[in-house]
Length: 414
Figure 1 (cartoon, rainbow, N blue to C red):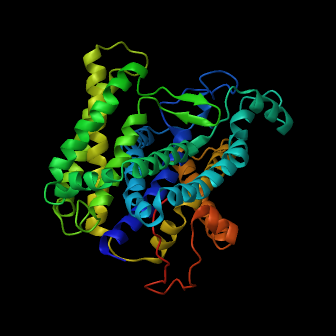
Figure 2: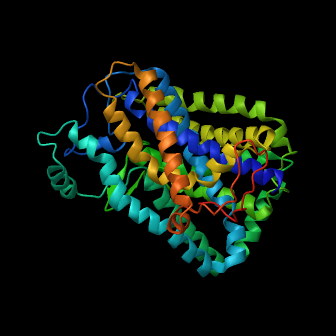
Figure 3: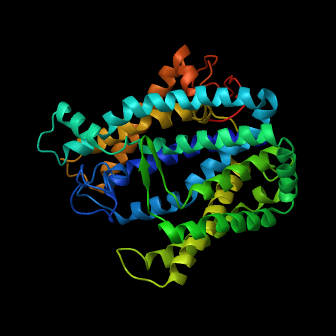
């Protein structure tokens, strides 16, 4: 495995840990209302915060704001990286059928079975009749079928289908995108500026029309209309970098991006302030001039790009060594993403009656979710059906003391 591939594998492990931490602290945000959201009333905000605890800490608001800005864009970027190579090996129809089996089937199973179980506590905290039968009546009476955090996989599947269609109808597009990213190795600032410019054109108008916080729920699909094109830009930005070649392009471990990781940290902090300051003037229903909303939307695009570049740079610089835990987390990240929400919500619900403080409760929820979701992903990954659903390949056994475990190389990401 090349140094770049190893760094990206380790980044995949780091990302799933951040995702679990992000969801684990949502019940303890200082910005949440005093009481839980009513289950039957629009806009059904319990989807984002199923449990609302009386213990709060503002530090969690800052953490979640940072991750909401950069983490999802990074996940779409990483998802696009390996698509060109997979399309070249499998062809458009083979690639699409593989995506439908590896993403579509487990997505449907999780949304149909696990998501109702995960949201049952959100119903119980405000219900007059908390019985499972009453919950099911209220659940099926909703005008849509909540999908929880699996909205990401829904959009990812759609983007993979779009990539397959473009590869079939315009096969020269891959080479052209690779050429656009070819200079990114020596000139990452140019690629950064281009990414900000294109994502601003895609995001700012929609953010002004729909507002950055609006969600659309229809059937089993949920999405933010303001971010649809923004995520498309990041997916195909990753596609372009992958088409250029991982070692030769932006993600070279000895390139300027990796060497100047500290500068990208400063850029990420500056970009976050550029987004947070004007955005704070529009919260809580406060009226603000259009220019303030536009500045916040533009700041979001800068913060996303800078945050992504920082995550990539720091992993390319420091995360190029093997470790059994990172190997396992990377191999089972997809399975953990699919199953973690059930553990997270139920642990938050179980902690409601304890006076442990927001930090203590969040730590318990995170640790419990982390251990249980990882254990379940490992357990099901060893089964043929579980391996098929989670993409965790059978691995040679290794002991915790072994420095270089044997890992079957994956050809693409989820």
